[in-house]
Amino acid sequence: MEKKSLSFADGLVSYDLNGKFELTFNPMDSTFGERLFNTFCDLDKKQEEYKAEIEKADKSAVFEIMRKLDAEMRDMIDSALGAPVCEAVFGSMNVYALADGLPVWANLLLAIMDEMDTSFAREKKQSDIRIRKYSEKYRRK
Image (cartoon, rainbow, N blue to C red; front, side, top):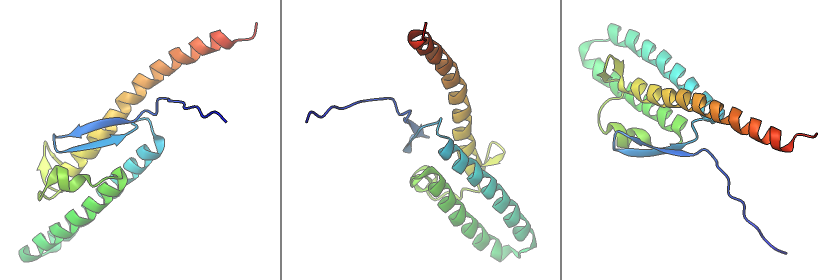
């Protein structure tokens, strides 16, 4: 029996994250997108919970709370991305640290979600063109 091989586009793209980690995913994968969106929402809720906890805590307990928050958020982010991203990208920085007015964890996830939105618009345009091309080619006359 002859064995043949087919190669096809799978949409996987590798992204360099701040020159510290290479993350590969298909920006059009709705399963990945849903997992990322749900994680973002969960992390946002956790951040609000911890903010309230920190406001009530005495000064010596704040650092312990922040370490706990950081560890939980790192686990959730790495799980959502399917890769050990946080250690490489953030190092020892707490992912709750602010940059450009947002926690760095939010900056990372928003950057990925923005890329997914941009990719969706681009792929939709290409898809319409390709579908039209094949529809015309194989249309019954």
